[in-house]
Amino acid sequence: MAGKNEISHIGKVLEITPEFTTVEIVASSACSGCHARGMCGMSEEKSKIIMVPTDPYMECAPGDEVRVMLRKSMGMKAVWISYVIPLAILMILILSLSAVIGNEVYTGLAAIAGVLIYYAGIYLLRDRLAKDFVFYLKEK
Image (cartoon, rainbow, N blue to C red; front, side, top):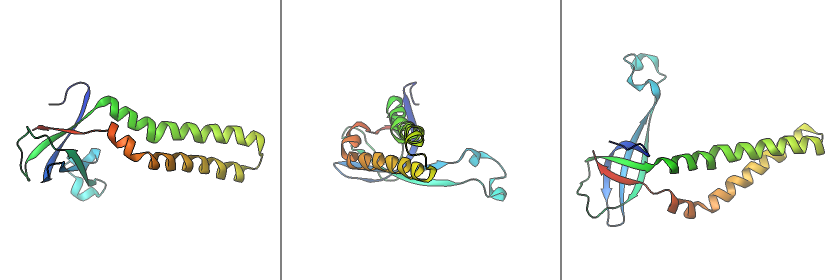
């Protein structure tokens, strides 16, 4: 079971190499447990593949179910990086540029360009960020 400071999901081991263990997680929507989900068409399931550093002391084989864990603080950091900071950049640029430029179209385009530059910077720093966001496995 996940601790208070951990986020966990159940996954299935697909492949094990000396460096990485590949795990598939099926993310379900909130209504996936509903008895009428087959008739509704609103429920959706997405499969996500995660590569976790292989723990030499954990015995598992392809096909085994495991628990994929992440520290909760890393989840909050991901939310800040991907949602909160870009929203702040967008709002700051819109509010400051609307007073300076005056044209709404140019203000909107400049604000969107600012957010795109931010995401390009995140993309360029992806290897450094990947070192911070480390998943680990526990037996189910």
